[in-house]
Image 1: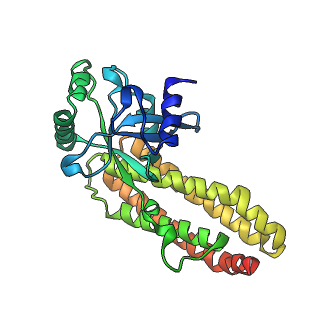
Image 2: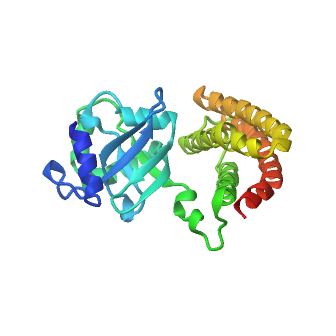
Image 3: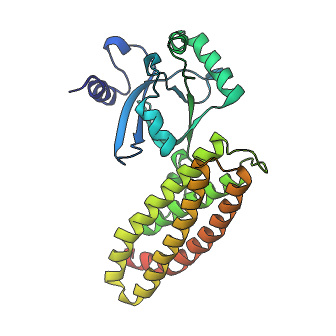
Length: 282
């Protein structure tokens, strides 16, 4: 068993407490998705306190290496991550701090834990500070009073999350010609990551299962799958703009197009499928 895996197992077995060199240290487990492999990777990381004890941050120090750690490169490609604190598990969007905000956070962290300053002195690489911002879903949307059960409830919760997230994206600041900032970049990619997984699950699981039981809906499912492909093309344009250094105005235009496509799609899907799903559960 690797050292990291031993720490992970001890962490999970003891509500986040570990012994050895990390005894008494604030740790979390961060699970990222491989940028190339698409597989999950879990890494134990230090949990420095943010200003005023607020926020959840990790530092991509890699012991002062001149190379960013793998988990950091993963979250740049796929920003949706899972955080384990020992007392809770939640989903978050990983957003590296930029400019003055990064300098402020890093200076605070070094005052709290000077070892990070030593790591920075060992490398010419600017060591990233990453904020782990909870998604709305992790804040208890699934436990809301009166929430619907079963597959119908699951569908409405996921759709509600997607509607909330696209609205949040459109509220993020966007200049006319400034390069896309990390906040907009990471939230856009995380949203597309979630949407892609949701549509893949529908196309390969939910829709075939429902079509087998409701053959009269086969044409409707084909239409939904075509809409998924149309939405995917818009997502691909957004990701290309972001990774190619496009400006915020261009990304905002594509986000608005995605919003129109997606909201109309979700409305059509719910109008047709929710009565079927509720009838199956009755």
